[in-house]
Image (cartoon, rainbow, N blue to C red; front, side):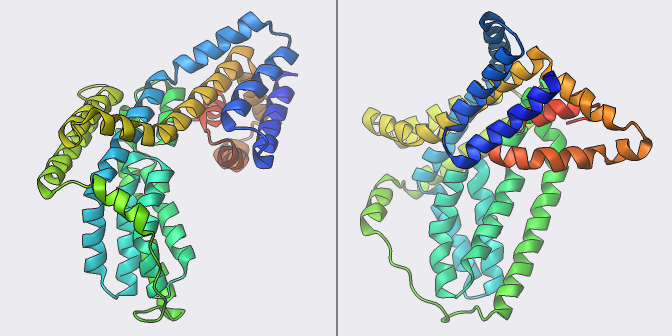
Length: 362
């Protein structure tokens, strides 16, 4: 009974998100609550399950808030623009160089772990170049997406933070284990960028074969007003290196490091309170949406665990077959089942827990 309701709940969640009728936050919190009620649990028990689940996501949720705002403000100072302009200049009119530079820019831009900032840095910078050189814009999207996937392994990226929540360990500790895999991913992204560049050349891409793209002067003026001089940018770069170094060595909690880094970044670059408030409010929506979704996912996992649905689902899967061949193919089976779920629910918490209950290491 519990296993059937658990699988049905996942299907309902995916269906609701596909239709776009509700926010993921609402879906991830309400549907599991209804499932628990159907299983006969009283509201007080369910509230306890939710509280236990959210406790496991608190530190990572706070991390999201400060890391997203930190890198958003860092982008406002113009540090990324300097790097992007330098890379674009080096690429020149070489199509393959342009695609490789795209991968480098997307990788650097996704240091914050959010799609919005990465897209706002990479696409406006590279799209005019792609149009001017008649390179298929889908290549730009493909490379950007591939780089975001690899950079999501950072401790403040969604998948790593959620997996760390399931494993009940610090996200930075988990990241240290994933660094070799991340390096391989970065190398593969470079290879993909070269291959796509060669493909674009075969399709007729090249200098002077495209069209110019018009720019919005008003938005450009607002962006320019926030940019800082070279001295500030050097300080910002060194501050970011120090923050990442602190995260890599694990000298403190990641969200504490980002909180202090953000405070220093705002105090040095924008000492005016009104500007500080404006920038925090500017980037807060993206940060809060991610954190709220993580908390809602934590509530879902709390109900999964508390009601016994996860264990029942794992037992149902293992009861299908216990042969050696089945056990060897189990990781692939689970990946085939939960990857579509992860795409639509934006959370791998439940799938990592399911893997753990079936004896696999998430």
